[in-house]
Length: 129
Image (cartoon, rainbow, N blue to C red; front, side, top):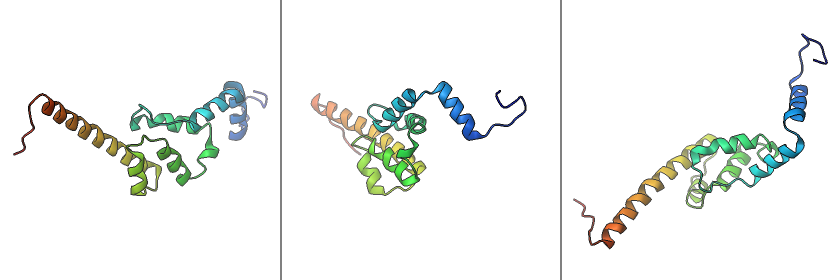
């Protein structure tokens, strides 16, 4: 409005005004800390939107693709992270795909192993053909 009705505004100026109005420094700093401390915990890998959303508040932590990948896998749980490192995955998209596959694998296999243990404890055994 200060430039006139039909005057275009540069993107950087727009972001500066928008952030100053709707995202004061204290909010941006809090979100950056949240991103810095972000770990998978009980979230699924599919909930990666949280990572992407918060990454906008701390772009200096993920300046390039390798740093973004590294920040992401460091936050994964201890069951998935070592496998991602071992695969040597290079891109963020690949990392997410592998992490989701591993999560699904562990979810399915952990469930079947727990079922087998319960059956053994109750006197039943799993017999394979």
